[in-house]
Image (cartoon, rainbow, N blue to C red; front, side, top):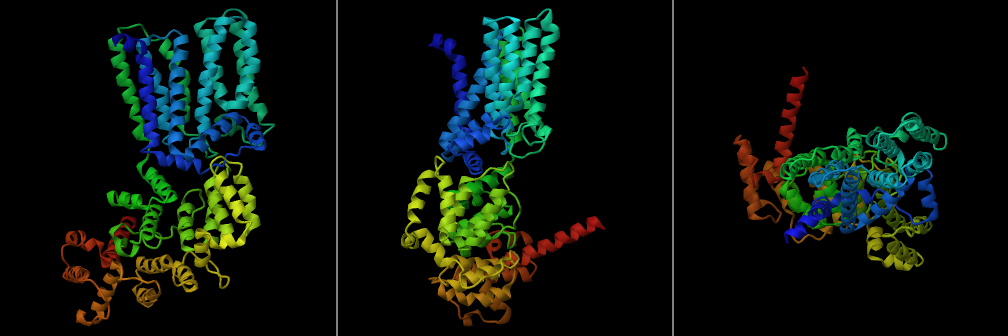
Length: 603
């Protein structure tokens, strides 16, 4: 057993690290994989390949997008990431080993993938960057192997003249790091003499920077972006400092390991273990909790895990409009919206319909709400805007699929077919696209399809109207007048006016609920009705509504405590904080107090 441990301890540690990476992305952060996948559409066509490799770093981008498509199945996506991280760690060690590193410093080889792991806390880091780093380490290793077998100036010149340009075109500006490594390896470690010391460094530097600058004449990109990497990051701006730290760590770590002194193994391993765990603290720095909670909610909406959304909100109250809208949508889809609306944080009408922002993320949640309400055109418009806002100009398989469903619901089969033929060139959307192409050949079958039958029944078709996100009660009211069996439209109408604290409209619209088919009055509605009745009448027994005794008692007690200016902490505790009147009265009071505080600071 001891013999096996001595022989395979390094491989064992690497496998444990790979398993940790797999667990991290397959379970707690699986939603990030879905986030990455939904903002690209990898096509299995020759034209798509040619389009990608026509720019510097295109091969890395193509390989990265090929692997990213497997994020559609998070388990497979996590495996691919684990293998890439394992490759970076093992290649770092192999390069260090060829430079003479001792086994006792093996743990240092984990530093580059750990720093990269922390950098991936930025959800817009593209897989092309990781692929380029793997290619960089492979090239460094190949250079070392070739140098041992063909240690002459001609071989080195050939590698510089042909290898560096090819590497740049395939993998981007990581070629600068490869050039630096070659110079350090050849002229520090091997101490070249004569012409090597004078002309070859100049040749390597000239070839590298000429490649990057000359490429600007062939591709229409700013020179700064060519130096930073076209596909290393989703946003076409200057990359984060962390990108340069990762790149420097990858190229310098093997060289540093080779120069560490030969010391006692126990001391070395313990010291390095502490260093690795210290670098692991980068992980907590890179992953912003609020941002990833937003991504989690969006993933659960995409997969329609409504119960998980509610459980997540029960554990930690939502705070942003997208989170609140996701929770309210989940409550609606499980039939709990009008019973549990105020058990969760609400931020006005934006909690049902977040305001439109021109980015790739926020319109998606609102579009999902519109789609299920029956506002087909608005759902398609929001999905289209989100797709066009993707910073690196990619298309989206998920968003295109939703656009197709909207087109089919509206009967625009020719437009839908155009999108579907494109989706047929994808791996995971192809089966669905093929089924839909067959379906739209038969309009009668479309009319009987469960999804499109429901969408067509719920959409507003009586006349044209102008959409206004400032009057969502009017928009949902139009939907309900078109189909008075659209329960979701009625509930969103009622909840919207409640969240806007418009009790007059609430009481005006309430009788429309007779068409929805409730077997009882929803709990939130009961609370509002009881409180309104108390304002106008002295006797609750004459109230012509069937309400629960418990709801009556809780609402009456809340009003009594509020009118007697009772303890605010008592009003903010269950069950009173879940009462609709707590939101209507005390939330508004809190807003006024906050306004006064802000005014006091200003003046």
